[in-house]
Image 1: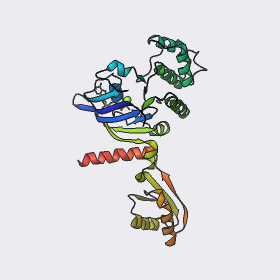
Image 2 (image 1 turned 180 degrees about the vertical axis):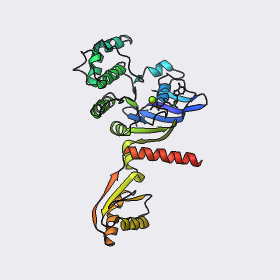
Image 3 (image 1 turned 120 degrees about the vertical axis):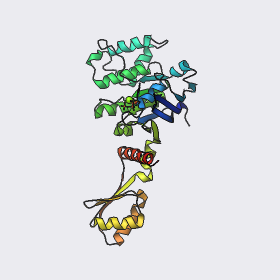
Image 4 (image 1 turned 60 degrees about the vertical axis):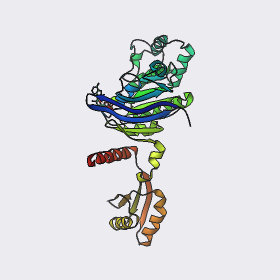
Length: 311
Ligand SMILES: Nc1ncnc2c1ncn2[C@@H]1O[C@H](COP(=O)(O)OP(=O)(O)OP(=O)(O)O)[C@@H](O)[C@H]1O
Ligand SMILES: [Mg+2]
């Protein structure tokens, strides 16, 4: 098991009577990219502000590399690099000058270190151009390079993909993975866009209304039985749906045109196929479709809303 870099335990942040963050706990390990996923106003930025000391937790404990941020703030925060809002940059200066200036604020950042971070974010070709000539994606990269200068063990990026196009997102994913693996650092990224998290993260924590609803490895999340869906194209879909429903009792079954779709594990496909054929149905195709993170996310939120309204 790799080392825990960030441990958040029972974190609560109240603004007046309202809990922006409500008793959340999670951990992030070395080399792990953790996606913090939640709709607008769910508490992502507030959590990040508590972790970085920009907001004071009302209750709960946060440790970074074993140091409690409340009791040993400096020892804890030295391990963190981050972009919470837009990074401060001097637009009339070249990228490299911004990095040099930032490096001068810390002790012991060498020229080689600056070179290394430029390479890590893939900005070698443009680092000598002025920041005002950069695209949004390049500014993001420069910001991340800056955040990496003092060799943090935890990199925190609040909505880093905002405004990037799909290609920019893909590139960011590649270089973040590269950083996480090469430098063995933990990365916390927040986003409200599911498809991005699916592409970028190893683990995802879903947050809603200040509460963590679920923490799962992306692969595990997709493999969960209840999240698998089978689609069969048959000649008599309503009849097939009735038969499948009676014999296999899936939680949900739907008919659209001649497609019957239902939630059952894919291991059942041979049995279902035999069963339908033995009932004289013709099958044109049958396959499992894993749900997108988006569907899982919405379902998780809906279930949660349902449970809350029942209580
Ligand atoms: N300084 C503050 N004072 C009062 N309420 C606040 C403050 N900061 C945040 N909140 C409230 O806390 C809740 C969580 O906000 P937060 O900014 O953490 O959400 P978020 O998940 O980052 O949303 P977004 O996706 O829009 O960035 C919201 O209801 C917000 O209005
Ligand atoms: Mg936010």
